[in-house]
Length: 147
Image (cartoon, rainbow, N blue to C red):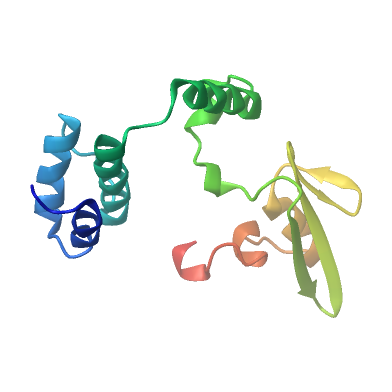
């Protein structure tokens, strides 16, 4: 392992997946999770750099944990939900439907449309169109094929 760190990181892109899994076992002393290749690459890249240059300072770790608790209220169930499932609070989703522009604001508790709170985008899409829609598809956050 006389390779430089940048060379090791670059090599991850072309390394076959079984070898990435072997590297995971080597660097983490555990079996790799059943996630996609991109996840393995990113976590391995971080771990390689962490071992070479050092990890986060304890003060930074404490600060991140505190911020995480503030965001999810310490609710373990909420903390397991992928952060990228819901757009960031304050985001405005704009959709034109039959010549009218509809603006939805993402709130901490769900969504707001025309001054009214909603728990789901699908409920808003239904109110706008009068038919059942997948809200994520209607607002362009997910394409029909992956819906």
